[in-house]
Every structure is written in structure tokens, then in C-alpha cells.
Image (cartoon, rainbow, N blue to C red; front, side):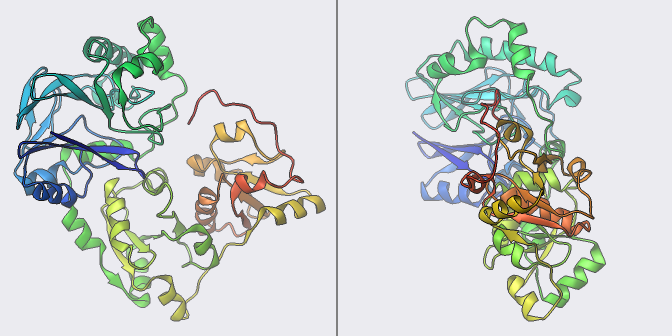
Length: 471
């Protein structure tokens, strides 16, 4: 028996490859499915099941493509009603896989179709629980995402989740290994651990939501307190996972269309496509195509795309580091942005060599900021989350979270100059590029963000206050 967690840091998502005696089950696969097929082929095995724990909100699963290419059935738990062929398993149903078996545990609450898969070894002993978004390490799935689909309040869903945890999961043996669908950084929970697996016994001791003496009312209050609004793309991804989507092969064919500078400009003008530049923030700042926005591929790329580009059907033109075009198109597709229509061949260098117009954003270091603050009063925008700002910030800086860019933009005047920072420089360049595209020309980025600012003794900051909730 082989269990492999395939963890994707950008999405804080865990997919699973389980093999026994030449048969494989894949749980919650990513959009690009060739790695799973190649892994099974290398093992001389056949994919027998594509198991889904629920209709995911934060990414588009690869279940349809994987089923089509492997011939394996897609399996959901009770209450799922997909618009494609799938096996809807019954609660307690046993799925045979080589010499082992997988028991279906219906655990509604995060969503009403949420299901865990309990793996039993050759001797029938329970050894692993693939808990989806029902149980995380240090947390449980948020109960507010499925309110419309379930026609229930978040409190009613939380009550349902309480029952699922108490009746289906907590009675299981302490030595079972928990394999969740997400870790720290995912918006599907609020207090997940950086660890991606743990023993169930440890979770019973350390996970606030599994306290043995907790009442249902206490559970509801704790799991619903401190929830941030979910990203706008979440319900759109749920719809794709439930109703279907284009094959990843079609998405790649459409997106990997190389364009000359002239062709790129013509496509932008004719289609109204958003120009997305995925280069590193400090590289982007030195020169970029007018009206393009920067979301660097080497940061929290997919979640920020989902948070800031409201229409998943938006046509997108790419400017990337050379050689990373397919990676970018794939990572956009992971969160449902399937309509990349081309990329700038040979990157921004080709645009500059063609002597076409470009913009830049002034970027200064923290030492320069400190010197300027000695001379005069400055307008400083801190674009970190409110919780980060409240814990510690430059005195008199204004909080303008990137998460709520439209509201934050109302705090900015086109007639004033602002110094913009985040924690490390990634989010501040996103913020500055979006406002630059909207006609705000007086934003100066602070390189290195608050991490660098704290090293400057001359910049006054508030004292650290430990935040009550990690967001």
C-alpha cells in the first residue's frame, strides 16, 4: 500500500495518490492531471477511482479530465448532484482498492455533500482518514460557504458539522493519520496549522473544535466567529466543479498563443483583455506595458487572482518570464480562469526592443523612507490585512487592505503622493499597479515592506499586539 500527499503550496491544497496491488485512487486532484496518470503508469497501476470530498470552492478539480483519460468513475458522497456522470456513494459504502478498502463517511456541515474517506489496510484496520474540508489540522471547515446551496444559515451548517465531527470522526481510533484537503494559507478555514498531516489523537487534544467538553452552542459560536468574507471567485469555482468545464487541454491550446508586440497590442485593443504581468514585483516596477497589473507568479498567485479579478470569464493576455507561459496558464486554470488568449512572445524585453510605450512605478527602500519622514509628513498606505495592521504598523499610516481594493481606493487622492507598503513587497506592487492602471500616478512602492521598515530605528511603529485570530 502506498499513500502519497501531493501538496500544492500556492493553493495550500493536498491531493492524494493511494495505490494497492496495481489499483489507484486519486482524491481531490488538481486541474492538470498528467502527473497522476504518469505516476500510475510508472507504478504499473490502473486508476480505479477519482474520489471527491465535496464541490471545492477554492480551486477547480481535475476530476472530469482525469476520469475521461483514465476511464475511472468519479465518486461523490451523498447529497451531491453533479451535472455529469458520477457514482454517488452511500454513507458507509465500501470501495475495494487492491488489497485494501475505503469506507465512505458522509460528514455534512462544511457543505452538505462533504464526505471523508476512511482507509483500511489489508487486515481491515483503520489507518488513514482523508478528511477533505471537514477536518483540518488545527481547524475545521468554515460553515458559511454553502449557505445558498444548502438553503441553511451558517449557524445551521455549523450545527450539522458539529454532529458530523462527533458522530463520524471523533469515535475513530487515535492512531489514525488525518490527511486534510488544505493547510495554512487556505481561505477554507481560519486557523489551520502549517502541518499538513497529524494523528487524529493529537487533533482531539489540540484542535479547538474537537474539545470533548464543548457544547454544540459553543462550537457554533467559535467556528462562526472571526470569519472573513470569502473570495468572490469561490461560488464560481463551485459551479464549475458541479456543472463542468473545458478540458485543460483546450485551455492550454487557447492560452499558449504567442503574440508579437504588434499582435499583442492589437489583441488588447480588440478584445478589451486584461493584461496580467506575472514577473517579480521589483522587475515589473522598472518597466511594464501601460494598464497592465502585476500579480507575481512566485507569491500567492492563484488566490490573489481570484480575489482581484472578479470575472473568471475575463479575457487575459499574459506577460511572463520567458519559459513560464504554460505554468501561468495552468495556474490560472486551477482557479477557473480559463480564458487566457495569448502571451507576449519573448516577454517584456520584446516590447521594449520594439520601442513601444511603457510605464514604471517608483520604488524606494526603507532607508529612503526613513530619511523622507524626517523632512516632512508623508502619506503612507499600509495594504496588509486589517489584522496585520492592528498588530503593528507605522504610526499615522493608513490601512488600505489589498483584499478590499475598491473600498481602499476611496482613501486615495490622485492629487497626493503616497508611499505604499505591505509585509514584504508582493502585495504593495499589486496594489500600486491596479491603481496605476486606474489613473493614480503618485504611488511610490516601499521595497521589502514592513519587514524592512522595522529595521529602521527612525521609523516609529506601534508596539506589537498579538492578534487574537490568525488570518
